[in-house]
Length: 122
Image (cartoon, rainbow, N blue to C red):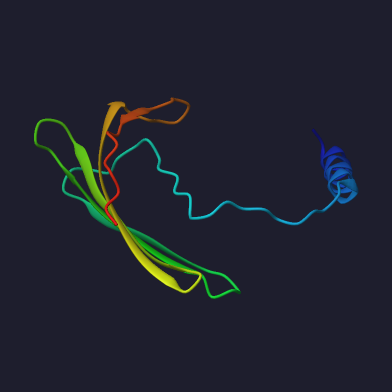
């Protein structure tokens, strides 16, 4: 595709997007976390965190520290914690998780992790 064709394609896409009706954004309650299938190297640790605030004073602060250990195969252990305020009520949730690769990921390859579900503690 040449440069001119790229510009034409971008103009057509912009026209289609402008034509689509813009509605009100809708969202369900709570945050949605997406976890990649891969795990880090053994011995490495990280903290993933994010904040969310709304104009009605609702608030959510999430921290997810994790470390990779090797008891028999590399396993990522993490503890997702969420401190939130909704309609003036505060809550805290803690959810432990362990993740192990069944089929490792790679460029052009689909990976498969095993993550047993753990109950959330509030």
